[in-house]
Image 1 (tube, rainbow, N blue to C red):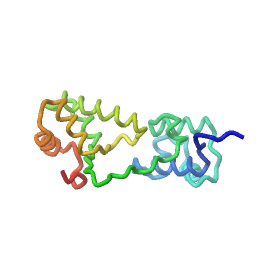
Image 2: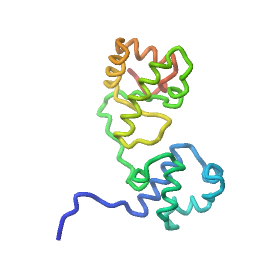
Image 3: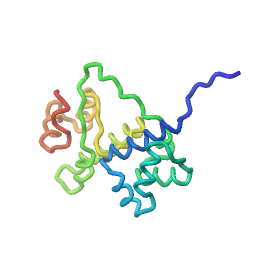
Length: 169
């Protein structure tokens, strides 16, 4: 008998993942039906989330595409939240960063977006709306723009690129 070095997802972990993905995006079951142009009915999505309906590979691919994530991410368990160990977190508003393509700071925002997208990919974090970083990661962003940590934080706050109230730096 061999010992497995990994665990397989279960129907209940996949169901929980579907619900978490939908809720992360602040979508109702009806919103999923609308986004899918009616191909995923609200009642069917609810059944998948409760684990009372089997999910085919074809439908799993469709849902992964709908949530804009790799299929493997849909089938994985929800990773446990990392302990902050008292370290400060900075929460970036990815939507605002992506929408700064015509501002005076478009190049800086593009650099930060590129940096954050690599972190999100490494974490398999496909939320796409916000991303939290350790306060110490601010140092890297400051170095990218040849600024101090304090002036970088001030700029991020002034431009509303971080979400206030979550980063007591």
